[in-house]
Length: 291
Image (cartoon, rainbow, N blue to C red; front, side, top):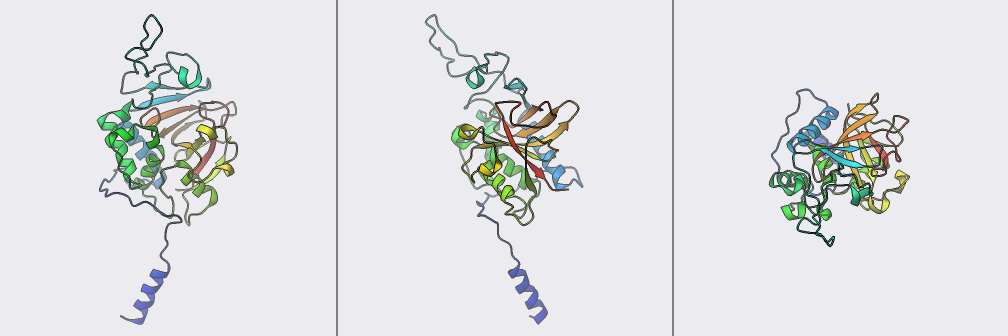
């Protein structure tokens, strides 16, 4: 080996960059997602999210100014409402609802929701699609687990889309929790980050990721309060913005038990905010810094 070659080899070893945090080994995956030739990484993110949404049947959820989050289009029929007898006790259909009463007390029978264990994720096709997302973090849940809340798959959906769009470990790290990659972006731990955090109110762009806290932390006010892997969150990929119509369309996993397109109505300012819809009090935008 020549001296010049030896120096080059040593230099290559010295500059090897490991992930900023350990990454679970993805299960073997030979799937290649076709996108438009010449598309940028930002464009690939949007295109792949749309492709997955269509594979799940194109479910649409409206997140409106009336504090509801209702399925307006689904490949499945609405869940059967609970049957009651003369005594008011639930019959064979107990546990399934077609109204939003459990979520926000509206009692609006046109506000369709799919409870856990139903919807597309409970079908053989949905299970197989969701299992692909889990493989990106080295997990292989069965179909029973896929439809359980403890195996919520919205964060691995985002992780899968990012990897299929070509983002490497210098740009984005996968995780089972949205708060993992949100904190990565907030704290600037990556050498070539694809995203940075911007608080709301703000207007997102296609390719951005919009996030809300949920559960016990639903009304969190400051992204600085987000704990790595501990703050329950939900995030969607923005695919279309209509400033004139004051709407944003974003695609997310495990939304009403499917990959759904959320039609988000913006606030009076024409921006995404934390108070227009109490079901989804948006906390931040992960701004896409890619071309």
